[in-house]
Length: 261
Image 1: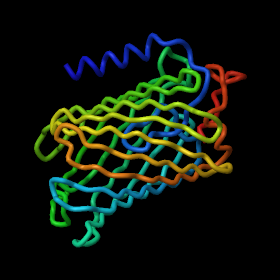
Image 2: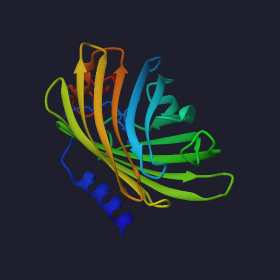
Image 3: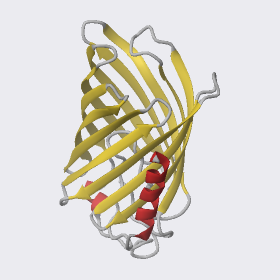
């Protein structure tokens, strides 16, 4: 039933009318958008989480450091390291990932924009400094569509654990709306069909100056998801931040798409 819902979301995106605006940035959590950085472009990002894990019965801070780099205009890489501080327990390494993303065409070439992502990650099996680190591999299909000020993005990922051979379908769906040049609102929904853990993450973004975006979100665990947290993220981007919502025709004014940053 849940798989049918995911594919219905894809069909919904397919039948909507053509896009009019470009939406360039990933959502605040795990939903990746179609567009990539330009060649040679570098974007650092920092996330701070504060929340509570009901399973571990502990409040925590979580620090995420991310760096994105454009290898070509259609191919980028993203590295992230996560450290966690459980209140009353201490500070420890929690997770890391290396992701690469490639988009086949320019924005608007197809009825929906399609990209592919591959990720290598490691994270602790248990929410404690003594939990063992587990290696994971995650191929991902990204389907995205811009509808004027609205963006719809669906991610379908298959996370594989090489040690056990287990795999798990992970889905995430993001909706974002541009209220103006400096404010965006939206939400993400994600679900792991193996662990039956899900979350809903409403969010709001503020874009300041030319190269600074501030994002706020709150994640609420659903089903077996037992973790709630607030997140604030700060992103530095080269170029004009307002270009992220510039109106464009498919393929750009002169056959080239608008830059991501």
